Image 1 (tube, rainbow, N blue to C red):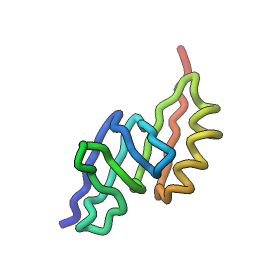
Image 2 (tube, one colour):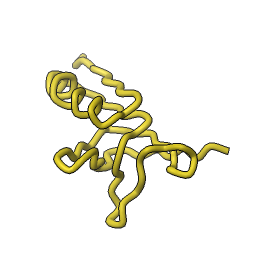
Image 3 (cartoon, helix red, strand yellow):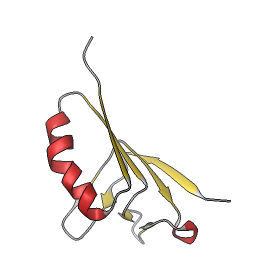
Image 4 (cartoon, rainbow, N blue to C red):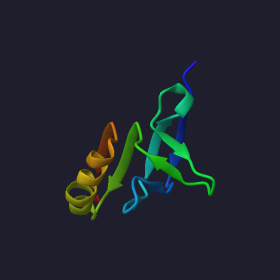
Length: 86
């Protein structure tokens, strides 16, 4: 059986220069083919299966700054859900 883990607001070390904190994430455990792991100090490291951002005012940052970082790191799916006031 495939082991899938969910986390919200977890810090993810994608590489030596980028630590991001998606609103939610899904990852497979390494023993099930996942490309991320939990570090000795409790951070998620490596490419996720899914990173999710729920945005109101930060859409530009999430779509133009974070997206290329997730792509370079090999994140398989990236979902940005833009909500509106009222």
